Length: 355
Image (cartoon, rainbow, N blue to C red; front, side):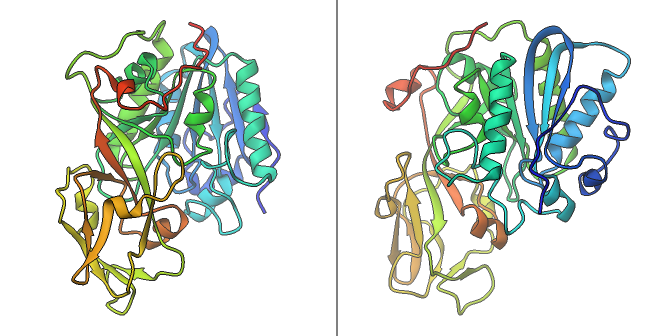
């Protein structure tokens, strides 16, 4: 079982800048929070390896710290290195673990040691007056690089825009790192494509470096055309008890083999996502409030799984293990970046930004 004691360090351990994720357990005994002092004392917080097989965050931090080996950091930097045990196995999470990005403050997950550990990390960074939060992830399907936010406030959107013009706003799933830290400071999740790909590592490293140098984030909405903004309107999972496959024709649902090619494509109503061999829709779609909205988006017609209205999917993957552990995909709709809160009345204005 993983060592669930939070380890805190104020220096870079020898070998940390060169070790790979699979061998990180030989250097760090468990989840570790690394604090490095910089010229600006209010820290930037970065979390990596919340999913053990998503290694881009670790690689990006290694690249960044190598750059500053002989120079002072422009700002203090705290790095949380999360699921080291899953990284050892090359997995998102172990079968007896909760998802490390579903158990931060605000989670609906039952209390457990991992939930308490994430609360401890959050409290430490609150007391350190964290200035910006970055959570670095990968995904398994064909996706572009993009930033995610959980608030539609200007500083959040402008922070994400520094990573790229494609920005996604979401409120589900609960318990994610960025949603917890949005209570403290501007926070963003970076989706950096497939693990370890050079472009994702370089973009993430450059983004963290940019944030180390920030003295302020503009408190006005991006101008027209400044970003492409999308709102996640539904999380889609396989309905409990339904079997699925990309190759086996005997399952309840046989997906089309090119499913992940549909990511970040605005799909028209009527498109087929696969063949259905049961009497009901084998998917379940949940909106921002956790209410089932399956019938709004999907139907079975002549043995095909049909999309009922125009949406854009993200994070579609061909990895059956990931689909079971997390979800099939998210459905998104475009927002007006000049008036995003007008389309999302549930948006709140509670963040203590403190610049």
